[in-house]
View 1 (tube, rainbow, N blue to C red):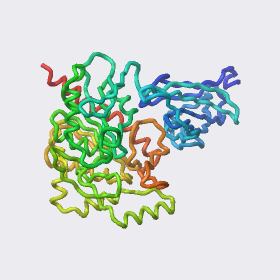
View 2: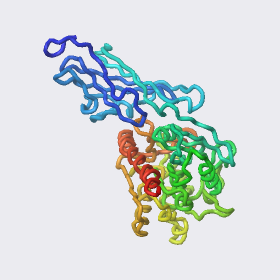
View 3: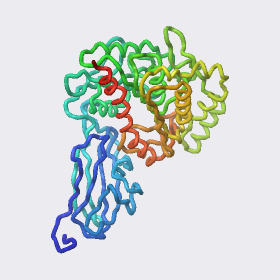
View 4: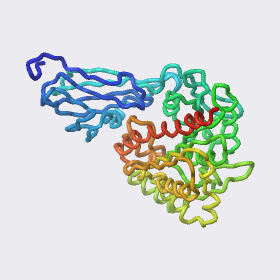
Length: 446
């Protein structure tokens, strides 16, 4: 190919850095092409459930280059200039199980990039996106009644500990989040608390003593600092993270994604009525009931008929509105007792429950109590309930699970809004953990 100035140059795709962490953005530059040419860049990447793909067409600049960090595509799977647009806008192209062995064996994925000129391939490259830096060790934990996976970072330690909690899906929390936190030097205990072998089947009457055993397990290890402990939770796990932080002095840093300011009713396995999600010393933790009525079932049936995901948020909102003042007050989490940094993350279009409003309630309580530690609420207009690991495909982030066959839950948000929220949030997560666990330890050292 001959480019401007008569210089002969082969088209190339350059990626920096070449082996990033999955949570790290990359810069993509297509060079050596005809100025003004329309070039389509295609991306493919395997994840656990299959091959994900995206594409975008760009017009080359006067130097025969396309810089994906600063150029908006003419057309494609995303619209605005975005260095990671090709990755969050991916859709599942080929569905199949891509994992071999267990999750800890999947430490990286290879992303493939191809540049096409009028349907003809002119350049290609591939690079690895790492969920974990080399050397991180994972161990299944089945001691003291715990069901967990431990992610041990590099070095002799003592490492700063973080407990990771999932939400109402049950089972072990997201292994990608755990791997990325461990890659940033934290000793991560990814802790299940229901919905898997050896634990309650449903999210109801889960014993708080179980989590105290997890704290004891971490504190007993010589390679982990005994305190302070950080905790990161999602949805019902965020409710739990705030509750545990308020009731356990060892936990002093809380990161809560889509949180609640109160303890809510549990989620039964069948159609029976559940009590509190949590128990302590044999008694139910005071809770607010959600408002699940016959109208809810009729709404679900209507959503199923018209093939519209079921928005569950009104069930929780009505429960708060109908509860009397005494009930709400007794169920409100004493977040002022946490004793360290608190980060709250929410989407303003959360359809699962009113997380943004409830996070505001947490902030209001901290304001009123004169909380002396750092706290912040990050809330995003076009994001929903599913804010998670940055720079992943988010085209499926607006729904999750099933209320009944053929009727998924609505999470809310848009793929782009969720992607932007994830990219913006992750540095804050690391900053708050660093401030609460590392800076606090250094400040207290003799």
